[in-house]
Amino acid sequence: MTAIKTITLIGAGNVATHLGKAFLNQGFNINEVYSKSLENAVLLASKLNASACDKIEQLNSGSDAYLICIKDDFIVSIADLLPFKHKLIAHTSGSIGLDVLNQFENYGIFYPLQTFSKEVEVDIAEVPFCIEGANNETESMLMELGNSLSKSVYKINSEQRKKIHLAAVFACNFSNYMYTVSEDILSENDIDFDILKPLILETAKKIQDNTASSMQTGPAKRNDEAVIKNHIEMLADSKDYQDIYKIITNNIIKRN
Amino acid sequence: MTAIKTITLIGAGNVATHLGKAFLNQGFNINEVYSKSLENAVLLASKLNASACDKIEQLNSGSDAYLICIKDDFIVSIADLLPFKHKLIAHTSGSIGLDVLNQFENYGIFYPLQTFSKEVEVDIAEVPFCIEGANNETESMLMELGNSLSKSVYKINSEQRKKIHLAAVFACNFSNYMYTVSEDILSENDIDFDILKPLILETAKKIQDNTASSMQTGPAKRNDEAVIKNHIEMLADSKDYQDIYKIITNNIIKRN
Image 1 (spheres, rainbow over the protein chains, first blue to last red):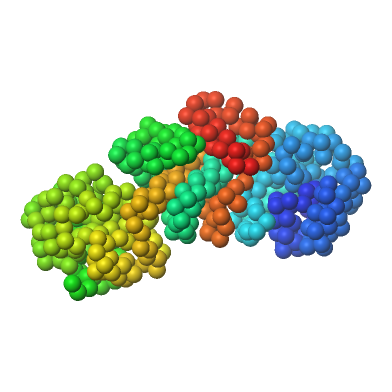
Image 2 (cartoon, rainbow over the protein chains, first blue to last red; image 1 turned 180 degrees about the vertical axis):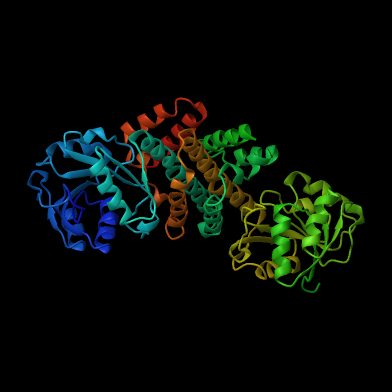
């Protein structure tokens, strides 16, 4: 195999969009974009100077690499339908194993550890990529592909990648839910969420050069029982928020 | 009353340290630093060209304003011991009411909405301040004091401030705990926490220009049952983390 120059994106969602733009910026050729919705395939393909396709069986076989960027649940069934088995193929999921692609000759993982939204630009150079290949040559080619986009490319096996994905759910999805709860509390009291934004950013910045456990502050860290009791009373209208408050507070206190 | 020029800090912890340095940078005079530990009082006072004091009854009466920067639980008892009642006095707590200072003539709140650690520099200009005064003149003077340090100074009453403090516990303390859990999961699997740092920073950046609820991603948002089930199994060794995972996941699913 020679180095990857031409890429087909299987999927037209957030991951495909951000990766596609980044590849294009780095001089790669996006050959084709597949989506089960022709509209979505055309929409992304038009941005990437690529052709669009909504029938996986009719996919063009002229690319060097095929990247599967669709929802986890559909990776196996899409892979089954791919009409050629000898091309380099990789999926971009944090939680799906390598072996779901083992009907192919050269397969691997190309997992960008970042949260992608359509509205928000991301600097791909700062995104860590987790790479795994079923054989050395595939792994080298995917490492090279990652290095062409990002400063942080890691060789990570499937077991480690699943742990990283789990950790990312806490670090990203669950911290975002904490922001959502705070947004709710403020909006119920007619206070602008803007007032909390510097604090949120600072909290994330602090752990860039320190361990998270050493940066813990707040009433639970101080075991400030009066404040904790008061907060739980203030959440009387929402059993859900009260339960979250109690369980996390108790966890922090246990570690003190 | 004339504008505040000379300040006494009651307390020598993180809040006193960061505020003291910021005042000094803005040309204020720090007259005296009180701490029940003379060592701590001297340590901070020496950085601020101030004198140190460990007996509240002997506090110098020559300052324009006295800022109480101590743990919530001790604010009332320290205030009781203050030997003069006619000076401008304010506390810096998010969760303690204004009325705990009502034995004074001119009292108020000067609450910086930020997480302060000794190790981490903070740009005070970006810190929102929540101000409340028992009378108009005190409120104006505290607003002016806030404006001399920060771009974001809000007039906030005690009820609102308590809600903001509660919201901040979710946005800051609890999101930091989510980082801690992820740090734990990675360290148990010999994976460097560095791999998650760009994701954590991006998650906090995304909500600077978007609502938190609209930025939610992850398996719970997609209601991806297979991944959720797998994550819960992976957390079998920690009932605590499993419980946190379940409760937050269920909350996110409910909002879908």
